[in-house]
Length: 346
Image 1 (cartoon, rainbow, N blue to C red):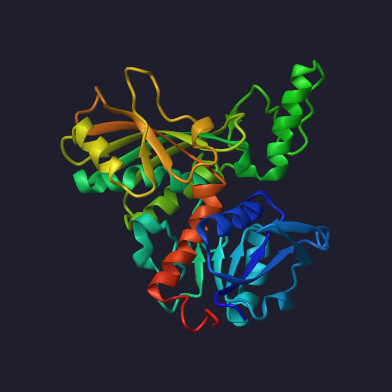
Image 2: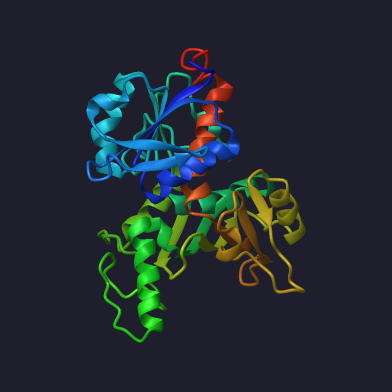
């Protein structure tokens, strides 16, 4: 076998699954062999990797034998079903679903922030919620400037967060609207084209929808701050890919200066400052789509609170919000030896 990893992707035909293939090639992940799994409906179809077709296989419990690392992006129920089998077969599982994120025994990782949470014994690592990743990429560097007491965020979330079917629904409804035809919601509960609505997940007894609750709980875990006060309002907007977030960060003392915030963000890996007041040019989903970095701008003091600073951030939900972050986790595990000589075949 050629030097490299035996890689498997579960949920390969989905929007995130297809991004994995592009990222593997772009970043040069050392791959000796690649297997793609999906539902029985997709089995037998092909996807392209490095210019060659790869046949999609049906996801089965016995399909993980001989894999070194398995990237999961097929939903929480499929992750719970297949992760034990993959681990038993010897693979490291990097899971993009919500299934294991809040399990205290499973690290929840954004590599630029808490790669240290991964230990050599870990065979399962959770990829965080996309909205939480964009938020934390923007605010985690600010910890160097003071103790963060509270975070308030309102989100503008793209169709890609709901997967390929929701992206297609937005395209179809937009075309119908412009053609003067009725809009017929099929995947989402409300008309999507030229509309926005509260994130389409169930609302809990506290009044927060599921997406908002994920951001609160996952942010606390990743930052190691179970007491961090986080308030979130999540809204679905008619953008194909790349989430945007309006963020207010409150510190325990006087807020850092705008220049200090710009400098620390400019030096943060995976962040690009877009903050041109003269040109009125700030982060936009259209510019962060297809981009690895999270864009951060609209940096300004909160004139109502001397301890607060305000930001606006955007990040590609399919890249840093999902597939890219998962591949970066694998790269960190390779670098640390968690995926190493025992699994990379020569």
